[in-house]
Image 1 (cartoon, each protein chain N blue to C red):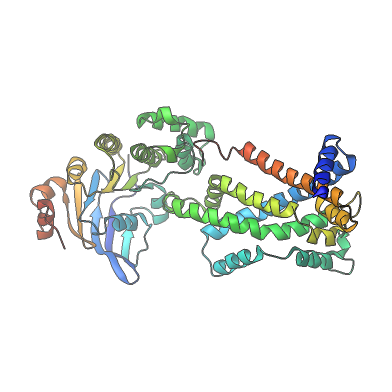
Image 2 (cartoon, one colour; image 1 turned 90 degrees about the vertical axis):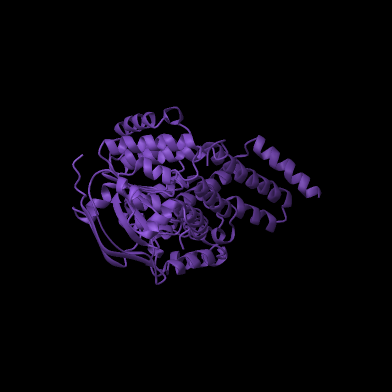
Amino acid sequence: MVTQLFPLIVTGAETRRRGKTLVGPVDLQLEGQGITVVIGPNGAGKTTLLRMLHGAARLHAGSIRWACPTEEARHVQAFVFQRPVMLRRTVEENLIYPLRIRGVAKADARAQARDWAERVGLDQMLDRPAPALSGGEQQKLALARALIAKPELIFLDEPCASLDGRATREIEEILHTAAASGTRLILSTHDMGQARRLASDVLFLFKGRVHEAAPAESFFDTPQTPQARGFLRGDILE
Amino acid sequence: MVDLWQGLAQAFWMVVTLDPELVEIAARSLRVTLSALVVASAIALPLAAFLAVRRFRARRLIIALLNALMGLPPVVVGLIVYVLLSRSGPLGVLGLLFTPTAMVIAQVIIIVPLIASIAHQSIRDLWQEYHDLLISMNVTQWQKVRTLLWDARRALLTAALAGFGRAIGEVGAIMIVGGNIDHATRVLTTAIALETGKGEFALALALGFVLIGLAIAVNLSIHWLSRTEQEGRW
């Protein structure tokens, strides 16, 4: 996939709530390939950073510049939440939704929904109400619903938190396949094993600041900052 | 107590024999109320969704006003509509006073705040659940409203049925603007008021039982048609 979005250039970006800085100032540049994993201790601002980059959290200072106009950039992005949001509809209707709002004909949308349901192993559940699915099934549906609109970039906020091993493996397989087919992924996780399995590059976040941005291998082998070294050792960071 | 039994027996007899006058009055009651319900829902439901998804300065004021207007005294509504539609009123030229249309207008004014308030609560809760997802999907304002109205449809049905209940049992406003004219604007509630005034308690009670039966039947059929209590649904 030839991306129109990247490079993403973030300069002095900052988001605040009630005068308190939650994330920032952040300076970074991301290129258009691979899986970027955002790691850091609880409360580091991982979710807020993803929301800020996606445009869902207000930017109070600095800038976030995509290679294309921001409005266009928003239309080729998707966001998968830690707690999947299910439309109160069937699995098939959930899958159809992103296509229908883009004006895809119903028959075509249904065919694509069936295809994606099969890819993520939900083809036997098309008529089931989505909110009645298990946590793992809901997350797979959320992923398929994000992927069905063929976004160039997907933000994933701890997509495997509270899932069991099997569901986590299935989700990771879907993510690997998506990345291999050219979809850019930026995901946050607190699971170091998952970060090692998925990351092509890592953003280490601590107290709202990006302390390290490096290729995965060099980050895990030779972390540059004391905070990252401590985090990888399993120290409690305060 | 004797009147109660007589009323029940008479109601049963009138229903079984399909008493022509009862059928006419009951049909008019249903026609007026259902028309008012359709018009009121068409106004109140999109208004409720709009109030849930849009942030603007007067939003809280409008919500508070709608909540306050749920207790709108029907007699006062009737009086206002009467003044507006009377020959010397601003809408007098339409010639609507003492017609079923005037009754529909009065009922719409009475039930719009009720339906909008109840619907707003449900849609607001659903909007909180959907907010991040729909924002991330870049849906337009109109698509948001449509999605919320569709996905909250069962809760909205309850709001509409509350409006139906209020409208079909209403007497004060429609008595004023309809005039309780035989074969023209007489409905079940105004007929009950008339028969009670005449001391025909058994007949008034019979009409009352028919009214209750009708309200329950409409509620049950709408619930059944929309399968609100079906297992695995929302």
